[in-house]
Image (cartoon, rainbow, N blue to C red; front, side):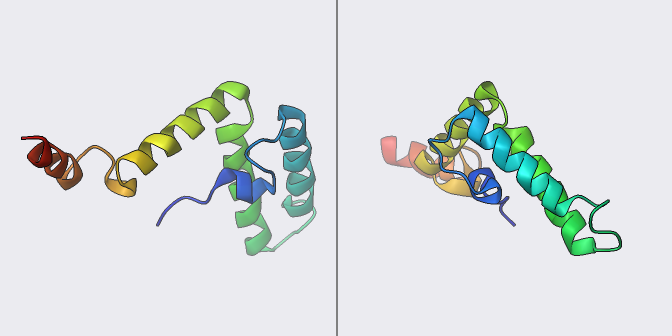
Length: 95
C-alpha cells in the first residue's frame, strides 16, 4: 500500500510556506492527539499519520528531499523506481 501524500494529510498545498505547514501540523495534531481522544484508535492512527507527514515535509530540507523522491518516482514509473523489471526494460529499449 502506498504511503499517503503528506501534503494532503496536513491539508496544505505543495507551495505552502514552512510556517503554514507548521500551523497545519499543530492544528491536526491537537485535533487527533490521543489525550484529547482517549480510547479512540482511529484518532490515534490519524495522529500518527499526521506526525509522519510532518516528519517528511516539516523542514525545508525534508520537503526538498521528499519532492525530489516523488519526481524521480514519477519519472521512472512509480513503485518499481529504477530497480527490478523497470530498469531492465529501460536498458532493453536503449540497446
